[in-house]
Image (cartoon, rainbow, N blue to C red; front, side):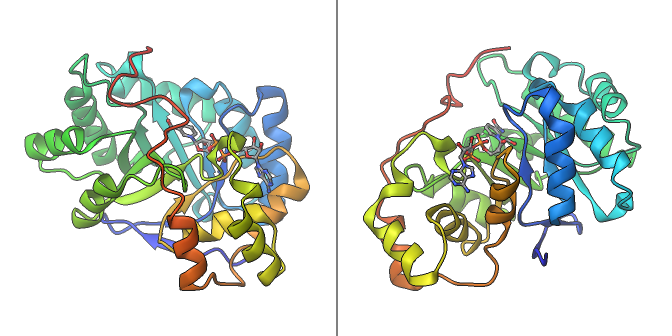
Length: 275
Ligand code: NAD
């Protein structure tokens, strides 16, 4: 499986496609991650709050794949923003790894005003070499601007809800202008929309001999985004990764672009205050 890599601003690079593990139950996680690695995935996205770091780590350690060929992301949970270094060490311990490739602040939680302190913690962690890259998730322009202005350190990525119904044009332009790579979470709109049945998606799928899900995932990668669609089914792991041998035409891309509705299916980062 030949998955392209995206260069990050700090000199590292990330496989453009990985496996997401949100809502993958701990008892399923080791199997699903092992099957993904067998299928050729080399990038796994988890988080402390997903409750499956230990199982992700076990699958990685048991895979026999050299650690340097793998890319592992985990995230700092909201209640840990003032104890980032300790929380990071707890995550490493659960993963059973010496380092992660990418560590993210999970939500900005601007209402609590702790994200800057968290970011300073991540900067320390990166200096220690135990997170090769650091970034953020669900950050709005103001949240990004604050940590950049205060520390001079620009996040390598911003992991945000992004799919055809919610394309975040201003935020993605800000990220592009600042060299922040976009990771699109919910690339398939979390299975909560009618996108896979829309006529333009079906027509493109038919034209290329691909599935509707492959068309949507291809739409993301053609715009340079990093994605990690989640599935627990082996045949879908293979399907979701088989998107690098065709290209959507400009018209096909434009038809999907036109689905933009400004509709978030997950929490609104400006008001999400769960800790
Ligand atoms: P997703 O868009 O990847 O959708 C997953 C759902 O799509 C599956 O449950 C299944 O119903 C469906 N699906 C998957 N493959 C399919 C296929 N080939 N054909 C038809 N349907 C298919 O949603 P997600 O899991 O929420 O997002 C991906 C990853 O992003 C997560 O697993 C997690 O790692 C990350 N994430 C991060 C945040 C954050 O706040 N940073 C929030 C949500 C998700």
